Length: 497
Image (cartoon, rainbow, N blue to C red):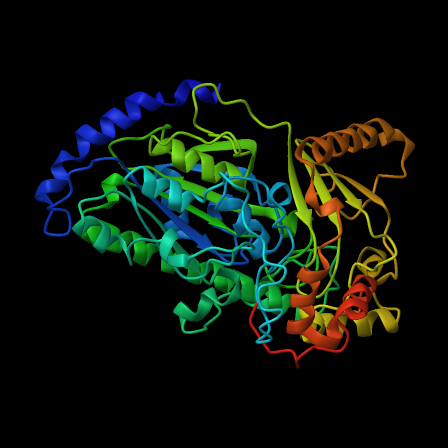
């Protein structure tokens, strides 16, 4: 049904070229532009849930996001490939699942020692023939830039990936451009509001998997402020594009790299709060690919953003890419999306998630390890409160389950009836058919893609982790590193996440 509303790709590219001739009259930034292919701009927010008015939130109004949705398309069910930044971004920049390329462990390929004998150990290089999107765009004559973090889990040269500082330099060269601008999002997006929070903690509805406590209310209210701040940041970028006469020739994507950084059921977890993200695509006003204001509720993965961006620019799609062009004339909607949680910082984990139209299936491969293994979040007020309430016996059963010393091998949730994912149906015989169906999907996917997460991380890769985190590395997998390399570790350095 929705395909009938879309302009054919060849007609879209033709109209972009013809309609953008007027840009020659728009001012000095554009004056030397000869190539009329569309610019592609990614606005990527860190750690942000879709708590926006265009997604149904009523506590705040997000006029910029609402306008983007009205001018283009809003995706209702977009999911990240991983609930942590570096793994997700490694897949995004290659159009290929991080688990296929072996770049699934958080902050891999980072040399964390000055020891010359160990400095280059454990580094991961992309397979021969696999190139990043910026490289492919450059090969097609585009300029490329990135403002902010990259965070890829493989060896790369930033100067090779990004050819200009910003779109002004690209326009001065007469080239179309592929750009990325990274936004603080849930990490501190409210800074543009002078750290003011218009949402009161008393207004927040606490989900059933959290205790109804002021600390959790405050954290949720804070995230709303971060969303508001991000809305304002995006407005400023769009205003700058318009002032430079580029808005009518630029396709703008807005999305986040995973859920909010509260540390429980969101970032680093494969529940909806960790992997379900906002995704908006704004079309140039005179050249829409879809009717304005369209909502697409197909399952979409962030690797689809990669392939779709290339296709909109008229680039050929390499065979190794696993994403799909969601606006292709022959597009076929996904039956499922896969998300993967592997090592994050010093904490070794192995979880796979299968999200289908109605259900979420989680496969926990390390059942002997708690949900709340030691992590960066341990010093945060919400974590201290959670554990204190558990010790006092004041947690609800839905909240208490995550303080358990172990976790089940399988979890199955009916997202229609149980959107908060608090009723595990894996042991319910009435859902045995769905459980088996999702098992089969995951088993087949792992085999076909040769999911690299099923194999242990290299000793040398873990060596770099130990150089960074020292005695925080308590999982048994680190014993092989100690046995091979002995006591060679430096004092861990403090770094951001």
